[in-house]
Amino acid sequence: MSNRRPSTSITRTIHLTIAAVTVMGAIIVNSLASTALTTSTETKGPFQFEPLLTSAACTPGGNAAQPFLLPEGFTQNVIASEPQFPDVPDMNTLNETGPQAGRYLYRTHEVGSNGAVTFTDLWTGETHLLAQRASWSRLDGIVWTPWQTLLIAEERAGGLVFELDPNSGAAIARPAIGLKSHEGMRFDTQGNLYTISETNPGHIFKFVPDVRGDLSSGQTYALKVVDPIGDRTGEARWVKLNQANVETNADDAAAAVGATGYNRPEDVEIASSTGNNRGGANTLYVAVTGAGDNRVLGIDLRESVGGNDHETAFVYDYVKIGLNAPSDFELPDNLALDKNGNLYIAEDPATAPATGRGDDIWVAVPPQGGDQHASASAVVRFATLTDCNAEPTGIYFDLSGTTLFVHAQHRGGNGLDKAVGITRN
Image 1 (spheres, rainbow, N blue to C red):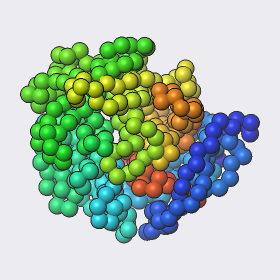
Image 2: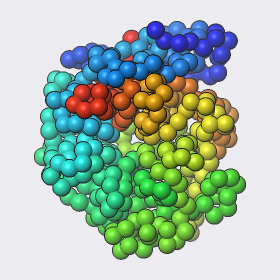
Image 3: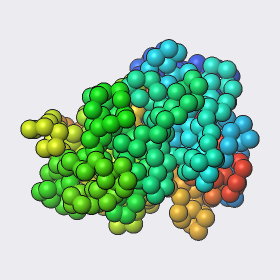
Image 4: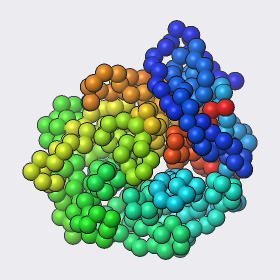
């Protein structure tokens, strides 16, 4: 049973377009219907939810068939699980463009060695291994490129990005993007790639290919706040890095130019990435998980002024405790935008076994009005895990924004991980 806010706590309504059909037990979007998302207890209709007031009281292992506690009216379907795929599934992406777009759900596996990429055919329900290498370690980030390949990334010191053929699984290393501890990756409409270094101090990077669609060479930049108005927020600039140094140690290359560091930036999200047409302005969102940060940044990606090495940006706090998030919002990790700019935020596990509460998925509601640098108008709890050991990872919306894919990772400690699709009834 879900917890409810008082019926007077109406904060905001956001209109969505959704509908779904069921295929092999999974929910796959097929057509559009007008609905709304709101934090009111009086809402009715598809894909509306009343926020959960508290996290689930978790237990070891939780509910295997229903790993998440959801608002009333939502359904979760396990679309794949161990031993269908290897341990520790992490990030997700679909084949966002090209033939049969949206049919294949790809995922990385964040194991210490022998890393793998698997995919689930959402039309048949079958799960397959795409690629696996003994040398791959802690595969984390994954993104569909504008030219219909896959990028995967290692979350380890000196980690690499690899480009994969989604049909054959053939992989090519792309060291020009940088050697560092990778996680989230997203493209802008020009084909530039935004990444982070998941360290402390971690930096935020932009890679500009010499030729669009060719990631074998290019120039890397790091974000530097040059006119601060707060804690590493304010006017910023993308600073050109020594590219040779980027390809041996991107963290050192960023530190050498005084790039702004944060404590464990992890995932990134942007509305204009590849073919998913997420909602919202041209803003890059960055989850910062480490103690002392524990927030989601908004970065306004402005137009170039005098060339890429002088391109400006503006950094502000989009979600933060004391600003718009409740006190039990903690350790923001993975991010996913829906088509109307609602930012879904999955927590990283840290305190669940000690506190007896499951890790949450939150929703940051877009600000009202025209202020491009305004913080989210509300941050509300959407879902929570029933397993004290598990972590929600890889949150990702399907192409029409009506199914939220997420993994229940580390369930029961080992060997029980699941890939879940969440939809409104």
